[in-house]
Image (cartoon, rainbow, N blue to C red; front, side, top):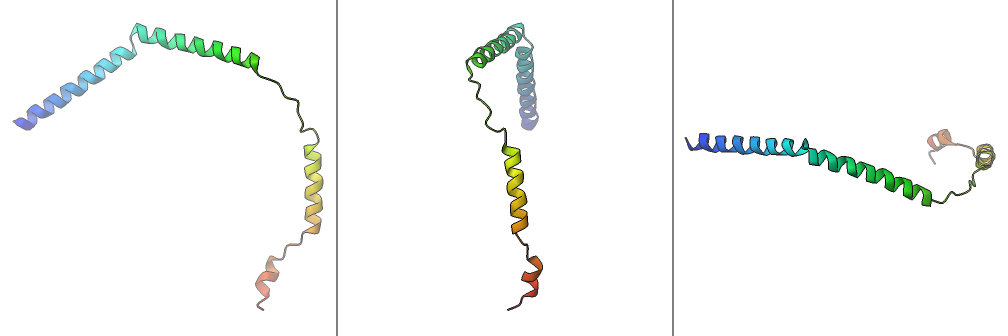
Length: 89
């Protein structure tokens, strides 16, 4: 009998909690506040984007330089994996 009353109280309290949360979430005041915050964020982004500095690009010849370095390193480097396995000294 006591377990049934306890279970009923738990179910009633959880259902009241869920009902109140849903009621608040779909209320007019909550939706108005939500859209006001979205508008404030958009305005803040516009204001902050005007304050940003635009930097000049310093990466114009980086692809050419890296290609030259890679080709030089490949020619000079000799891989000796099989020699490591064959030498048992």
